[in-house]
Length: 217
Length: 112
Image 1 (spheres, each protein chain N blue to C red):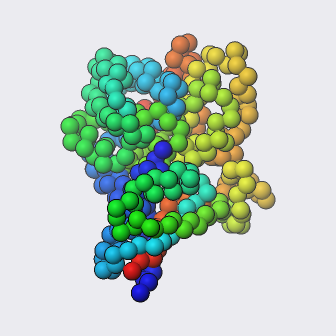
Image 2: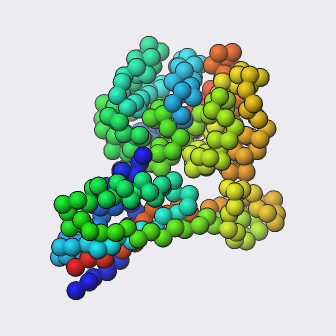
Image 3: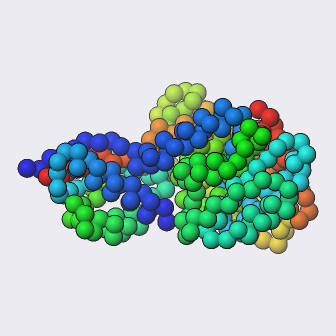
């Protein structure tokens, strides 16, 4: 006999449960966690290096690096003198809450003010997975095009802050800065937008100041 | 391609429900997916069809119910169907808060 079992069960329930546990532990240990997302090549790691240089003497920061196969980014971050844990997803397109839980076992959370998790380069999947962070940040580089906020709305809706990176390249592209900011704001009216360049240093001071304010919360 | 992860979770939830109800065969798995849930249905179905082989869900089909985006204004309290991801209230200067469209649920499992 056919039986219809009513479930109404969250497909990501198992992940979300661990994310809630992570969030509780971070809050108890006084760690603020940022989930840093963006396309491959948008400049996440370089931005991270610059951010660490600006903040490393003000607060204690640790980094979790998500990467498909390599430790290239983690090696770069290590050179900045910051504790870094590498997670290789072996082809997986995003980090999830259990991966972060495991990585955190190797970190002294009591000694950290800010934990930055650099997600796998991808504008789609990472937005869907709660890892227990306090807030998400998305890096969109000018060369990717101004149509990305509406083409990948979820990641921009989920992120508290967007960094329009490689802003120094604006004169060489057809990127419409006003249209991009307008799309970002209609999609997410309270989103914070920074225009940054790791080549010229533009906007990095304001960004670091804002992040410091979040970490000192 | 996080659809593979989603398909794996869906299959596990369905198999678990079937087992708990002493069923040995699953015919249908009902899903509710919001329009803004970031799910590519074709990729999800393909992943599910690969994963379900040699399991009680081998012949199971996904029955998908898509939920449109709807939101409520934080100022005037009116409800709107969202178009073009515009989260500004069309009738006042309030901001629209998402009420539906992000669902990722297994609704039901039809089994025997």
